[in-house]
Image (tube, rainbow, N blue to C red; front, side, top):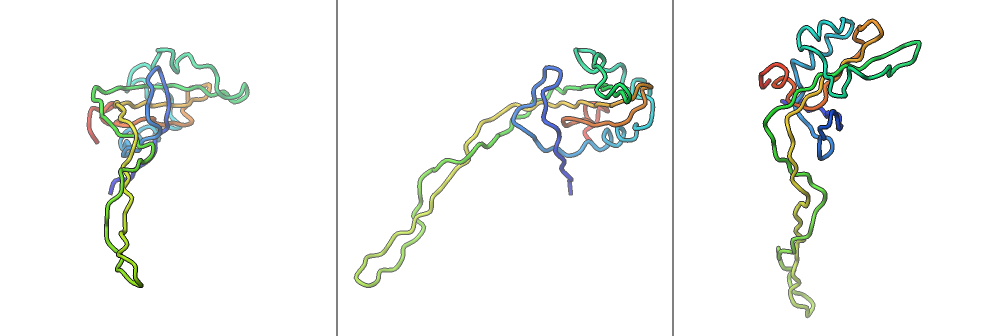
Length: 163
């Protein structure tokens, strides 16, 4: 059985994730790795994945904590080349009715038809790309205090596998 977890919806580094929150299987290896890094120095992540993003991203973020308890965000992002089309349902529309039966006649009345209303989903198609953003929050000594992944396909994009 595949456990499904929601990912955060966001517009990050100029890439917009469309269509609201989408469910993806969890990024097993990368999720375990990110969580295991809490308490370690950020240099361990940098040595494995290279420098963090600098495109107006986390390397230039100011303190997001307090002066007494500073916190800094550091992010690594990966984008895949595969686009997937996804239908986003926004409602339903009537497609007419279908005769499904007749009530028997009785008491001088004729048979009464029974109709079923039919509906179809309405919505639009959107392109959904493969994207994963790995973020670590550190203290002033660059000790990782929390981590999280956004997006999907994290194992594939960071580790080169489809797990």
